[in-house]
Length: 432
Image (cartoon, rainbow, N blue to C red; front, side, top):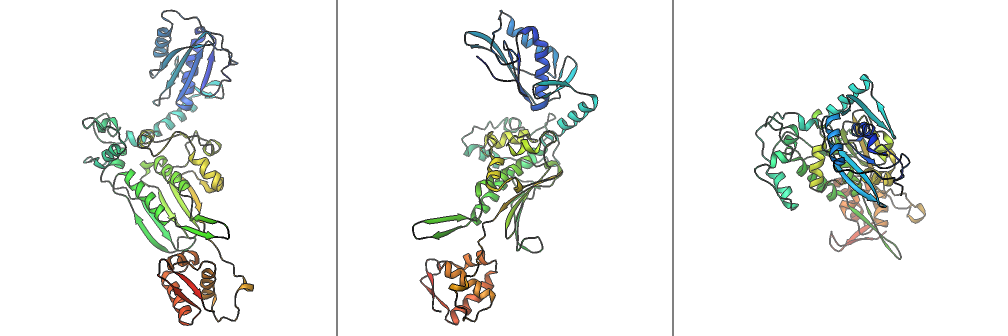
């Protein structure tokens, strides 16, 4: 039997005689990815050869790891029977590093354990200090309540231990004070989350500004999702043999981009994620850029290096995120890698809007009609979509509601068109 090749997260050793090297590999894997698996009784090429097991073998492995891998971890050590051969599997997972083995620090690279230089160690320690900083920093506000968060847990059918809820959720520091993550998830806070709509393709004119903050982050996040779903109108094209529906944008892609922005932003910078809606696109902005140990290639493959690990745990418990890593690949499959603008301090995700443009077919248009360009545009949109409402015309023409009504009034007054039926269920009839 063959277990395959060694990787950044898997190491093979033939016997417990190589336990020292195995412990070095464990520390190396923990420093690189936060988890790793060591097999004893397997050759470097993955061939299972088996390992002799005594009464104290597993205990001696556990004691060696406790004595020589620092800070201490509690690995899972199991005995597995593979093709009638005993193999020892040691799995370790932790996030409080960096970790040393026998007094030295290592980092995994492919299937190698490389000793870190003092400079590399300082860099690693700096990066580790950035992880989960919102759970390690004290909140400026200490009079906090969490009824909204408790309700979310209850609606998901998850039990809530009232006495220890705040500690179990990771909302407190060791000194008993609330951390900054608690501020994010509290019933009331100072976090403002904005959705801003602009008239054109730039920020020169604001049409609408929605604000959903000052409450539990998860509720504010849901409110943004609900609003975006409400404006994601579906246009219907009816042909000779089929009915085709097209949404303004892919709501699943937006959801993934928005939740990632809320989860992975560097909240300690006091700059919440935001949504900007232009006439041709939606932009989702988050603060922080990519983690230093995550390449763009890994990012686009859906590999995650969460900065806010405890916040991610809560997101996962409440069903907002999964550990499948499909969100980024989903966006790339729909809009390409160009949908992401990755900067040092920000990530901008752009989702194009499915705005239809209408090119006038002069052969089908009565050129004798005395209409200006705007009137002709509305006339042609109605020619193609006689069931359109005023709201539809505003969306498709990029004209204001008042201007569209003015044009319709002119067309009706001069007997170009007339309305048959009600405003909601009727249609337009063409006289000229």
